[in-house]
Length: 160
Image 1 (cartoon, rainbow, N blue to C red):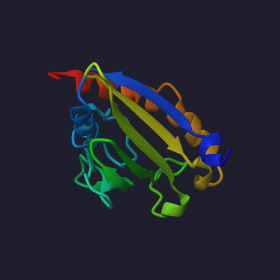
Image 2: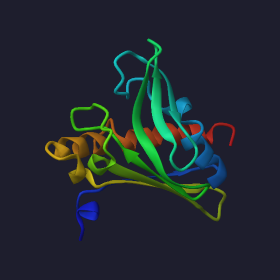
Image 3: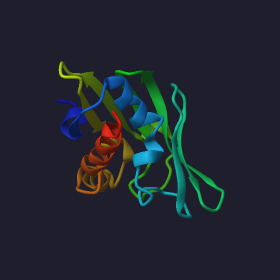
Image 4: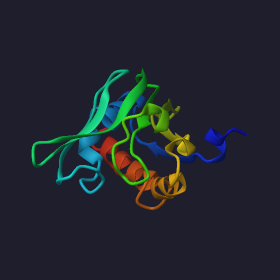
């Protein structure tokens, strides 16, 4: 096994929505479900944005007018999957160096009953260097990806 699979955080959720809708809500609609408390900006978060193309930025707009990068879109394949660099260091600050960033891959699999299974894998924590274990623990814990996927699922199922 490689470190990517040894140390990855994996979470899944099934949503009562098409893969197209689930993909769109997760990406274009990230601001509708992402908690305002989960950001690394210097002032309260006003809006969360994931630019919907390879090379796109993942960032937040803060109430003080500033912007705070937190990732980059590495691969874009709607409505099947996307991969983003998680450019948040273990000290919860922006990490500009992609070589020191972990990755988050999200896949959307249409099921026969019209629902969609969403699988998230956050991997390569060891790239963060010292303190990577605390980052893995944080995103793998109750306030991390599991809870975030539940918030996303609730929003994706609204008016689906």
